[in-house]
Amino acid sequence: MKKIVLLNAVAALAISAMLLSSCGAKKESATTASTPAADNTLTEKEKKKVGY
Image (cartoon, rainbow, N blue to C red):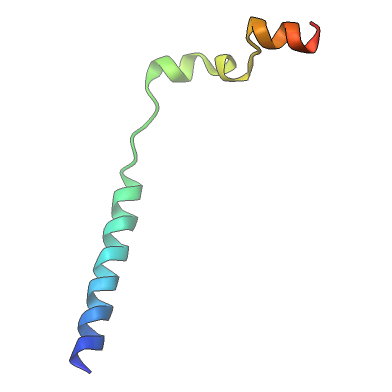
């Protein structure tokens, strides 16, 4: 019985630690936020393949 209680306590602490660490996620830097179109553009090679 004590092992089950201890296991539950450890699991609860682990879940709490994961939740708290996810709340402190890093924000995007100014350089990535200022160039959102770069992620959605074709390279020259892709343009030639598609026929643009």
